Image 1 (cartoon, rainbow, N blue to C red):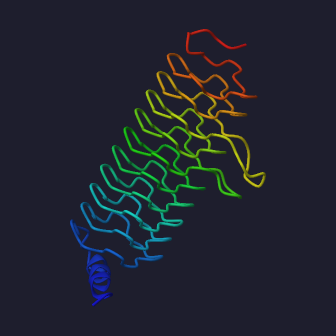
Image 2 (tube, rainbow, N blue to C red):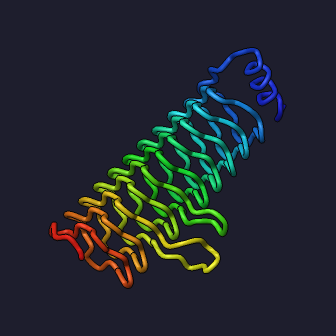
Length: 240
């Protein structure tokens, strides 16, 4: 019986059916298959193994993917708003333009994934791992993280070029690299950090070229060798 649910889903998908709302796929394998535009909203995908599968433009709204393995999974333009991905592993996943609005991503791993253009507004990313992998930076360029909670998150080497982190919580977040094998420094060039909470965050060596830090809380933050050239500081002045 363990494979019947998956086999039935794949057969129905081939027949043109896309709606599988609320289906129970807990601890099931859906590896390296083509399922673009599938509707798995409110599905139970806890501890499922979904590596390398193509879920582009699919619907995972309010789905539970806690502890799911999504290594290298394609979720381009997928909607995971209000989904639960607590402790899920999305290492190397393709998440371009994906929606994670108000999703629970606590302790999730995004190491080496591509989140360019993704929306993570008001998502919970407490203790999430967004560090670059040894061969690829985690890309959050142009991503929207307004009001997102990144407290205690690991962000070393990630790219946040022009990302919107307005009002985000990065209290005690770690933005430095601890491994010489990882590529580059954490890059927040032209990022919007207006009103963000960076209290006690470790920003050593972080690139903040022309970043907007107006109204940001930097109390207790470590800024050793941080590059603030052209950045707008909390008081509105421009760093030379």
